[in-house]
Amino acid sequence: MNSEINLKNHICEIGKKLYDKGFVAANDGNISIRLHDHEFLITPTGVSKGSMTPEMIIKIDENGTVLEGNYKPSSEMKMHFAVYENRHDVQACVHVHPPFSTAFAIAGIPLDQAIMPESVVFLGTIPVAEYGTPSTNEIPNAVKRYVQNHQGVLLENHGALTWGKDLDHAYYLMESLEFTAKINWIAKQLNGDRELSQKHVETLVRMKTQMGIKGESPKGVITPEGIHAQKFSPSANRSLSEEDLDLIAEKVTKNLLGELRKLF
Image (cartoon, rainbow, N blue to C red; front, side, top):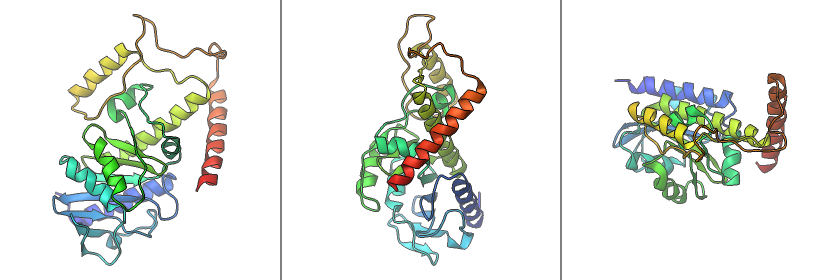
């Protein structure tokens, strides 16, 4: 069993990864680990996730009372508690503001298309939890609706939250969520967000079940036997090189980040 100091160190390592990837800015985001049903480790408020040290990590009880630590715990702890109360198999939560995922959250668009095999199997569908005022019970109440059947949510006009069997699992789900959102965004710019057929999704879901992975799966597009699901557009037959796609991805990313800066 990991000691608390090892877990605190690990929280700091994950916080640094999140910050370096641009998933958070300034003092945004929060991370927590369940020690047992009555005690948790959580990141402090007002501290950058990229510069945390183990002594900054706080131990709290299920009521949010500080048991150990000299910092104030994240004001969004209630959101984490909502997950832990409804999923006893979950041991860690990650909440951040990754740009592409947050853009989908702002637009109110769930990530529920069957676009990539990996996202169907490992991520599942990511719904949008209705907007709530940060640090109030509004967000926890919105999140509760989705905890049982999903591995994360987009928080409307706010960011994203993932949960997992341990901190690494919760972190990698967040990475997968942001990667899926980015690919989805780029595909939409090409008018080519083609979904997998129902037949292919059913095969992937069987694989997912055999692997014991939880989470609601996207539903594939119903197509005639042997016909791949696709969106037709005037540019459907145009052949794009890898260099073309890289340039498009770079342009779309710059435009999106520019728009996000205007919003924050």
